[in-house]
Amino acid sequence: MGITSSRAGPGVTQVTIDFPPVNAPPVQGWFDLASAILAAGDDPETHVVILRAEGRGFCAGVDIKEMQRTEGHGALIGANRGCAASFAAVYDCAVPVIATVQGFCLGGGVGLVGNSDIVIASDDAYFGLPEVDRGALGAATHLARLVPQHLMRTLYYTARTIDAKQLHHHGSVYEVVSREELDDAALKLADEIAAKDTRVIRRAKEAINGIDPQPVHRSYRYEQGFTFELNLTGASDEARDAFINGAKDA
Image (cartoon, rainbow, N blue to C red):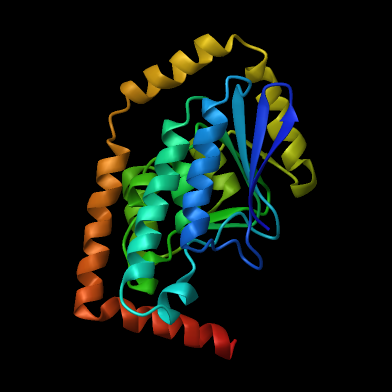
């Protein structure tokens, strides 16, 4: 349980998220994820990273229960910084990152996937930002990398989700396969990239990031500033309490 790294094949490192029951990492989990991804990219033997998760869904975002049971704003600040660190790690990783998504990909999960290089999803995968229903803001930066602008706004304001087949239509999900085929599909593509000269691929990743029109690090931190504002008004605590109480009642 936690964040683990393993060799999945020649030149391929697999980083796995495993925080049952819904893969909502605690504060330290986000920082551990960032460290694992950056370490994999810094390893000259790694040519490609596969980012995957165990369990019924890829990631449900931050651990809201941790925030609500922690006095003060330490857990909130830690989660925000941890998310920023892990999203940045995916983007800044020296080699391509292939995200494999099954089931739900919500909140922070969208941040990870939106900053990845390639997305492969199972046919039961769906993506969304429930932030407005949780009294928070963030990851519109990353959702905007998956869908067109006006669709992003609609999904953001309504907290609706979008499925993998729709994202495949928009070109942001490369391939949709059955859940049973997901790991093999990712490894097949990773092997193809890993077989190329890693010196070239590493410079290609750096070059593509360098021409990216969206300043993903700065824009995400800008979004987070409004989350802090909502916390000062009390709106965030009310929304998080309602969410936790609803989960208990379910």
